[in-house]
Length: 92
Image (tube, rainbow, N blue to C red; front, side, top):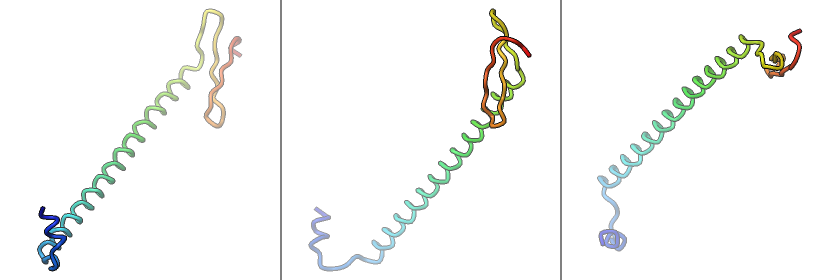
């Protein structure tokens, strides 16, 4: 009912209404900016932890170079580009 009355009104908005609406818009922009910054920080932190996990995992694999099976050893080799390949059979 108030909105309909406001639409039919011929007078403009008061300075207080304009200031309050500007304040609400500014606060919402500040809240949005802080959410974006918090999201960026979370992504950066999780990326750092994930890289540390993968680094630790690859260091563990490179430290234990030969695994033995019942039918012979399995050698793990690391290529220059960081990929792994496996060799079954002899340890040479």
